[in-house]
Image: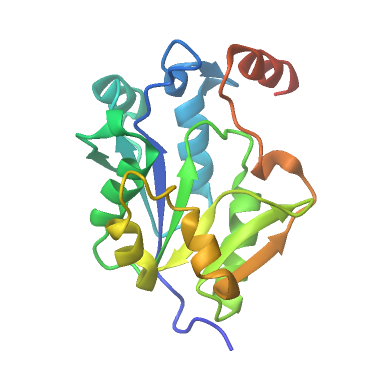
Length: 201
């Protein structure tokens, strides 16, 4: 059994953070031939998402300017200083006609469209409500949620522990998609992460 007809899947990029550990907005740091945020957005646009929503907050206008005329929707999280959960909730509230939505993080430019599509395909080919990549038994991104979990995410409070608490609550609903690369786990938090990434990219 599969999700039929083909599910309309929205990709939500959380790009509103303060980058406090980096000391400057990592969304705008040079990466490859563009910037970190452009790299992630372009991978999302090349993947099998039906739309891409970018949640902005800190340095919102600069990020929107950097993304130019790409076919995305941007939404502003006024509460971005209160943490990532508020950005996830802002993105979920922006959904219109989605059957499912994927959450992605702006500091994971290593995730290619091919990896995204592995998770999208796995979601579409099973009836599991949640699909996410797994490398060495560790959960990665993107995480795809059926629309039925939207209210759970919107109901989470600041002290809840965030979206990951749903993995425990709905553990039986998860389809773990085994991948052969740690790219789904790696993020860029600190200056040394960024410098290492530039050497490898």
